[in-house]
Length: 640
Image (tube, rainbow, N blue to C red; front, side, top):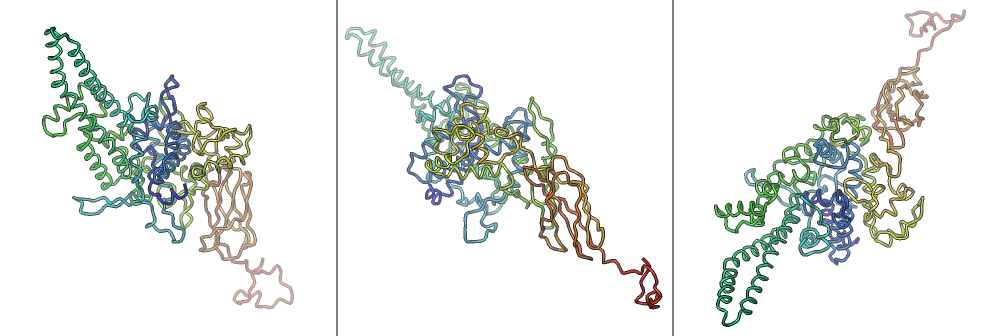
């Protein structure tokens, strides 16, 4: 596996885009994301996330292709991120992603988009060279005049060597019984592979019927007595009509089916490039530039229009030649075969339709939400939840300071909104990211090593007698959130035990499976002030903060930007005296509130120490020199 990853890093990264890209974003959202048997009573149909991951893992292991193995490993890594990320997001969006009520979809898009902008940049692995923006993982670059922009892929993402695998194991339902069972029961889904598989099956039945009927009519002719002219004439006429008129419909069906096959073989490449433009956060790899600019929008549109013109129209039954006849045939097919409205819309605007089917938002709205989530955050994330959903309301300031726990900038200032886009959360202190990283590492472990790892865990109940081959298998039944404690279908022998789970992962907001509701990091204390008691002592006071169980007090001197911890206090503290300071020196103090979830970003206050107090005379002894009592003298001492 290590060799496969080192030699196929670009395929691993492509896999990390997961069901947002492969087989396409709409299929991923409507077929791969949901849980097994969701809303369906029949246990034999409607497979879910874990079924898909098990399928891809097994097929990847059977493959001797390192690019395929790297891709599948990346796909499981995406699942890890969705599992922890969506569990976290659901706490604020009101529940797992749904298009209706619209407030849920809007909250998901804005919240996830903002977390994406605050995510540390993804950089290429290089152990010897200092990182710079040139080391960012990028989707590619644009060049040329505005009237003819050219997109050059970076090579950081690639499905070279994986196209056939994606087609065989995710798209070509007709040729794969295991894949057919994964799609079975998914009714009314806006999935290109599924819809055209259904059409292909209908065409195949017509083709099979043609040959069966041809054989039947020939057998009827052969069965006629030599003297039974009525029988001979009847079946010869029927045979002639069948092999001429009906033959034409059969040939049309064969050509149509071939067009579907050609289009579906191109679908992985199309989805891949659309994902580079629409799913990967930013073309240059810098999260603060996340969003869809004109270059990315036009490139995505060009890719979509090319597929519609060269494949989708003919996949939908139109003859290969263009013109009025093709449009007439296309209209006839839509009426006869009752194409779903979304498929008709897709021919007019493929990108817009795919995004509507996946997110419930048209392209313009979707682009605005993911490009400018900081502008939408406060109004959207404080909308009342609808449809009986419940969730926490949150402001952008609280998001920065108590949830993401963003650091301060170079001069010690916290970001109340999006004034300092360069500030990113730390993976080690942001539990959903930390848990994702841990699971991403576990995904890389070989089956024997993962089994050994499990044996070392402190189980609170019986140890499992068998262990899944990969850490990500059997974890959750849906990518819409961590549900293993409430879903009996998930064989979570490892993660269902809270002793084992808590030894691996941190408690996080939204997950109460093995902990009480995870507390958010507290906000910053209010009323934090400092004043000198003398030239050597500073008194610091603040207002007690609800939810804080501890405080950390730090100090820096003069123009230094480095803080030193001077005190760790319990949650009841509201004051502190800092002694042994130096006169005429400026000190800056930072106070952080904390609990089990971590420390707040901190609030600052500064003070400049006075000079030492001048000496004074308590009384005037008889031997006091006159210079000490003469106000005009430089040796004068004022009375105390």
